[in-house]
Image (cartoon, rainbow, N blue to C red; front, side, top):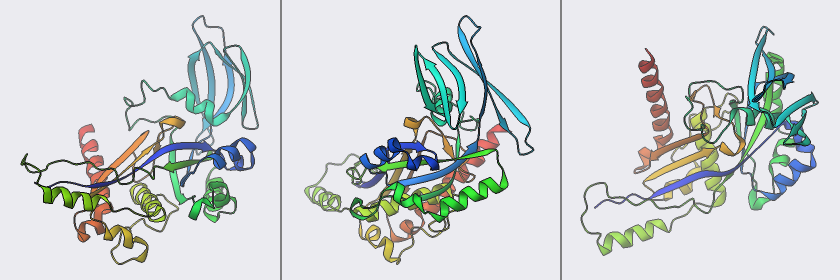
Length: 327
């Protein structure tokens, strides 16, 4: 009887903010309170507010526009609950009344909430486009050794963030830059998923002891974080990343020695952005999803050397099948 032992990485928390928010006290408080291990820099079309009309008996309607590359206006009219009234927009904040209470709310939160509902999140066509969707341009590691480095320290003088920002601003003034901070679940990195892949023969004592021995293996926090970051880079292939895009994991590289000393049969990772109500995608992964998941076999060194190539082939096959189905 063959038993599979897996190592699983998954995000357990996500936060969304603008680069300029790093200086704000509420954002600093969130960063100080949580370990956001990785960050994703992305871009999407900026929405500009026009008006909110309240003359319908059942709903209110808010009108926005985005700009095309030729700076032509693309109008977007959104129907929403009468309990929400948008009065004005200024300097990244919407002045709104919601259920009788007047508030100032950040623009990214208003936009995401317009297009996200838990009931429909998993029934949306992944090839459809929402104004809230974010294209991932760069992925980096935010959490330093012993928790000494946080995401604001990492981004404060980060050349990649500056590079992404300047590139977007130079190419078009119609986009906005947003940052997602992700927390990786370290405690569950060695969760066991045990299954019989051959038959239902009784589990022997020898097999059980072997499984127990293999299950005791762990990756250090730093190695686990590197694998989580590298797996996302290999998957999304962000435009501004260079490391890991085509070389991770490579046997013999000191950075990955721990991974090759394990006896895990598979590796899997999950990224969940439901909490921030925004789907993410990239040019390499055009499916716009709130949850991205991949499973990779890790049986031999050769398979370990190529499990992210395997992931990419799965993605390419999926895209090909989807394109064939649309013909």
